[in-house]
Length: 235
Image 1 (cartoon, rainbow, N blue to C red):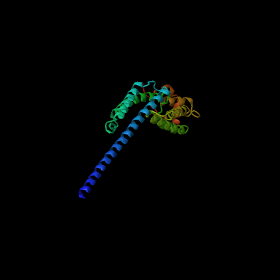
Image 2: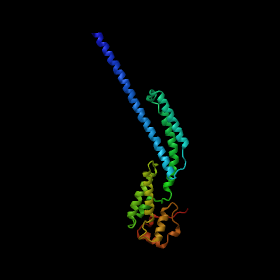
Image 3: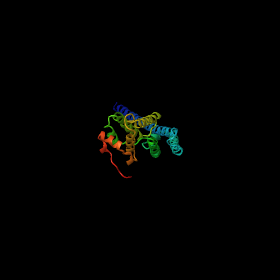
């Protein structure tokens, strides 16, 4: 009786160990499957980003060689899995694919990011926070200045992330066009043309010419007590 019970206990222990091993295998397989899905998603997003840049002629390089390298690694891993499914549960099974995706993704994103920033900045007015602070003190400028400040901040925030979806790219373009329109119409209704020319020039990277500071402009600046915010410098 004792021997039978001992044998039964050993069988239960063996069965438990088998079940635990099977559970560990299932968990490891699910983990690798999720990791593989994540890597595939990264490649899909990379391709979407490249196609989007191509569509808007932001970047004309096709990156066929880089993407073919990823495809070759993926095919090799697939063949290896089909030959020996047990292989995928190893911790380093997907490491070659992940490292290659990391390397190629970084290289492509660095190149495209430069092109993307150039695309967004092209035609964008040079809006400086100091200048907006000055202009915000003028009643006829205040509402538009607030809107310009918001648009400018959002554009530069979005410019730091290369869009993958077209709606995100279009959102940046819409904001850029609105910013240009708001800037060009800033104070146009009730501010003298000479003053507008001086302010817009002063806000640009090149700065305003001394000849732009006419008596009319200086008088207007003094009227709103903002003349001290402007400085004259040699190029």
